[in-house]
Length: 483
Image (cartoon, rainbow, N blue to C red; front, side, top):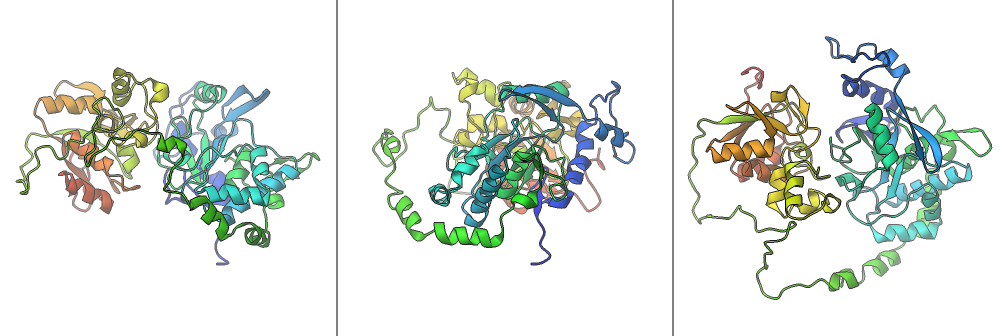
């Protein structure tokens, strides 16, 4: 246990552990690849060298672009690495009194020093249980969290699944003006590309106390173990070690504030529902009454024409390639859970049904409607189709016309032509959450086979269950081998 060190994970996958001492270096190491193609201070396009490193990296890092913004009645500057979202969120750790009270006590110590969250940081607190709010109040630290902007926004999936809401207009404008690589720090369990927020390209998972600390620092381009978080009300630098609560202090607060009576009180009538729940009209009868006008719940097509006997397996002939993808294509790449873009096939479908963009909600909330979800398959804003040279955004080329289309639109065109589809990918295809829609949407697009260097086992099983053949390249071979 003495060898355990403070860590985060990111910036794109939860399995990529980063020591707290290495965070600044990790951010800068990942920055080069994301800023290749952006104009530097001389107006030249930044390029990648033969080894994949960023040319003039030291010069680039010494002169990162900044954007002056006006927010919360003060002037501020955004730059690469600015933390624009800091969220204590998710089921993973927000029911753990040690880290939640630890975050509250760190907030108390920070407030006492005169520290505040950076004005450009969108902060939120989404506890995993009503009990958490009770013991934070009883401990007297909820007020301190709120003074740093961490107000309770709800109980359930929030930022971790992309329900973070829009950034302030000034922040969005500042990001766009210089194509900034901004970040989020959240206590969730998923940080796949395009999941947390469309405008945030790097996302780090952290404990709740570290989320609060990075909200104060306002950037991940900092070594919290050796550089100050900020300046206190006495004009002296404040370091993380100055406000971090001790294990004994946290333990004492747990003993004084957390008890079984809180759980009994909050969950005694959990199945009764509140007034709003009980006012929802529900039909009688043993079968669900499908509403054809609903854009949330629709009778799924998977059982249409299903028979009691197992059907025959047909050969795949004359297939076209719908997408060629690289390594670590996650189920979030295949079936995003977050924001629905207005100009996407799913966005256009909802608008045609009278749903305004402000009411789109998320893919995750509309997973009961296959019309929305199939249009969102492979529509992640960060997915790169190598058929288009690695361009982001869920497009492909329709053959033989050579027309560039959204993957859904191309798939429907192929389906009308009676042409089956195949997807090629690299290693770890389907990693991440075991999201069944990643396989369902693939099937509904007309994809008959996925050929990859390796598969995540659950997604591979889901593909089989949906009638999509998972094929693995021979050792040492990949899509480029057969190009």
